[in-house]
Structure formats: C-alpha cells, structure tokens
Amino acid sequence: MAFANFEKGLDTTNEIALTTTHRRSGREISHPVWFIREGETLYLLPVSGSDSHWYNNVLKTPMIRLAAGGTQYSARATPVTDPTKVDEVVENFRDKYGAGNVKAYYRKLDVAVEVPPAGP
Image (cartoon, rainbow, N blue to C red):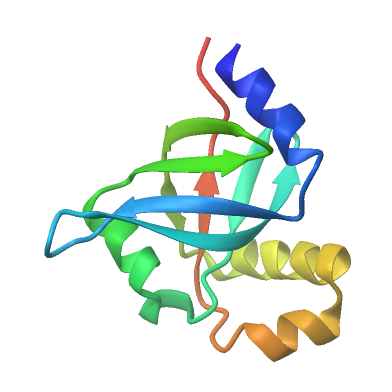
C-alpha cells in the first residue's frame, strides 16, 4: 500500500525529495530531484553525474527515502552505469523536462539511479 500511495504523490509533482545517508558522517541529507517513470520503476539523474555527492552516497549506502505529495517511500537504489540505459534515461528526462532544461542543469550525463517498486 505504501508504494501505491507514493505513486499517487508522484502524480502531483515533477520534483521529489531524495534522502540519502552521507557516506562519511552517516547523517541523512535531503535533496530535491527530478525523476522519470518507466512503468513502476523510477529513474533519477544526478546533475553532476558520477561526481554528484548524493550519487556517491547511494554507492556507499543504497537505501534511500523518497518523498512526494505528502507520502514517503523507502527503497534500495541501484546505480545505472550502462551507457545505453543512461542515454535512454537522459532522453526520457529531455522528453519530460525539456532538452534545454536538461542541458542547462545537468553537467555530466554518465550515470543514473534506478528505484524499483515495492516487492510483493
């Protein structure tokens, strides 16, 4: 049920809050991020690619929390490094947010992050 409620929250926004665990201090840190959906799977694109702090936090501690529309969802994030899949995610970001916005905000497009739906 938590994922279903979270999906409804996604319908109300184009930006979600991503909370990661800082790789050095262990403190939780939240960042606003854009997202795309492919079915029930979410993809996040770090603005500085593999140099993004939150991406490196995910590499060390893949458990994340997302918040949208007053709902929250916890999941295990998976880094996406396959260039073909990253290009697909980038193209979907361009379709959703506009190519100009992606070009303006995203400096390095070498990785993405996959967030799966809740299990059964």
